[in-house]
Image (cartoon, rainbow, N blue to C red; front, side, top):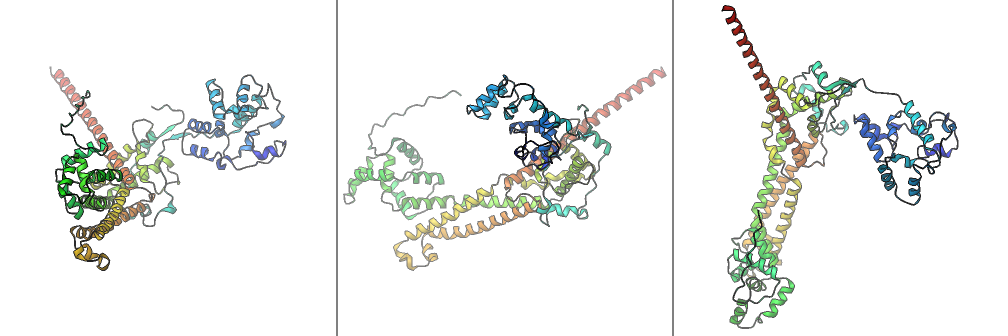
Length: 577
């Protein structure tokens, strides 16, 4: 019987006086999470639905969590009750579903068929050898034995995330906050009657452009020799047309890795147009041999298309791809360095702003006190530390008037006690930019730059001028200092080391910030600063909303006062007349 424990069934027929076997339901690994959901304030219908999704009896939550499952499903009378009706496997209403199981059809598919016919899908888990009535009576008896524990007062809860005190660093903000003398924080000014009317309620109380046709280009009247793929030729010709340069001059510049007035995308495009192995073979087969007259070679090249001409002159440049990569690295170096430098600077500034903001610390304590007042109602089960994303849940916790949120109430008590805290957004100006900085991207950029400079140095050493002497007999710094690209590599290596140190500082500052607030060490800067920015925005928006309501209330009051004054003046005139 799936409704009974294994131990109770292998012992044979036991009487109702058998000792309870197994842990209490609240500690049973199979059911404990559902009772925890109830304890967290999740509505019982939602918990029942979760039980049904996992194929468990939804009535389990009506049982006593202090007793084991086996002791409650036995019911009164046990096996002495007489079965009424046919066994489930022969019951006209259910036999076809048990036949489907016997045929090997999955349980999920059988349950879907039962659901379509309006049948209880949990019946498929019952014992097919017993009647439905005899098995349902046990669940009813267990439900009757359950003690009703409905609270007398419904309380709105703030579902925040508690931080384990044992995981907090001794210098963290929350440990410092325990000593109230370290912060000049005015007490939480809560009107008990107002608080109760908003966040508590008696049980049972009602709460309130058309596509343009592309023109086909007319073919050139001069026929060119075509040796490569048509699409690649067309794309290459478009790039080379924009970059107007003599291909022979370009080949010499690439060979010596000279500085070229070209953007990184243009250099990358020319590198991608270097001839492949098959294209090189086709070009060499077409061109005259190296010992042929220069005029014959030039005439043959002139008959080629623009893209093929570029490839032909690049055939004689040794290690052309590596040299292009070195030139591309130099062309993009300053932009990449500025990107890393700016990103690390923003992270460091944002970390300092959040950690050193006195206003933010006070606001956290106000939020903590308000949340404890909501969740505990003055009991001693107060939370001492919360995750920062718990602040976002203040807007979700609504009062019973369905208009006032916990965030509204927080803003109102901050206005009453410490209005300076309302200027929090002034402290967090650098934090907005830090939300867009990815530490992982910065680290990857830094790794690519470190790898790139190694490639540049290697290429320079392999192609050093003969006038310098044998590369293996000259110190690296002297060898690299003999060429413009080599001198750039020495300067770039120094800057990369400086960037690496700055990035390490930013990483260390952010790790200290996470430790200070007790946050998870795997949290990313994007997630952390996004949480901060979102809350500050919500906080400011709620302040503006309350301000508008207050102004409207005062305006209405003035209008009412003027109306009463006019009525008094009219009454006085009537008396005089």
